[in-house]
Figure 1: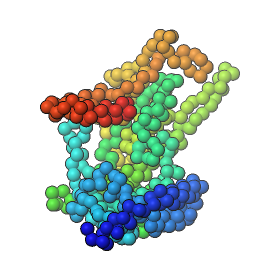
Figure 2 (figure 1 turned 180 degrees about the vertical axis):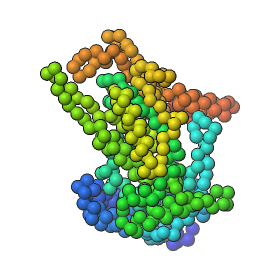
Figure 3 (figure 1 turned 120 degrees about the vertical axis):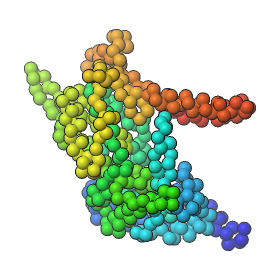
Figure 4 (figure 1 turned 30 degrees about the horizontal axis):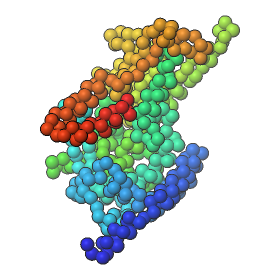
Length: 405
């Protein structure tokens, strides 16, 4: 190793990352607050300041070259990793530029099925630039996103979405629209998304360039005239922006109402729409409201060139059979259902009255089967290995499953 490269390596390792994170976080907090109060000029000014910041660019490079799980995955340029010298050079090269490389398509299997889904892997430079853009755009949209949107958001998880469903049905059995959006990431209308993004022209052109970059599969270039490439750093945020507004539309159509009957005040609650990325459910005690919600959402999705998948969209009830459907539904790997019980096991409402049922959430049958198959395959692969090696391999899998479930 030459003296120069050794010096650069030490220079990279000695970067005060905590200081950089604090600086960037302060800027992001200012963007968030400006977005909350509707000061668009301040948002745009602060976003430009953040993207010019050396601290933000350094953190973006570090994220895609060291922190991310797919840091060793190459794009179309074949670059899998960067040396400290190359990382420092890349920090200086990061700027908004419409000259982007196409993504490299890789196929990964879907858990529990024989199907595969495509991922578009950008080049290392494009990933770093996307990480920088994400730092600027995320706080603006976090201030605007709906309260029951949980997918790909900082500080929110699948378990938070399940907890929101439990809160919605714990006191009352409800009908559920269990919906599935057909090919969500692949069919999003790019022009509608860019209009919704509504950012300053330079950044808008950059996002458009990424959306239109094309995809390379087996040395053949395919155009991308619609959809958001799965695999990009900024793609989950763009998908969330595309689907933003569903919950507000439902609340606008069915606002909370109160009326008086026989001297008592009755409240008609608004439907609960809980969304995790492109998976969502709508819950309400009235079947006509849920049916109407399905029509409204189908119409709303057309503005983004999306539609519900009829074969996977159904209406069920949490406690009783409805038409040909069994009680309960699966969501994010969990089965959510209510069971009739006696007075000793029944929950109570806010007035202390017995409900006559109990809400139970367990891992879904499909997820249990996938987990058992994974355990079995590890045991089969370690038949001749020492017992300690098998235990060491199994423990993280079992611990992860237990923590999630």
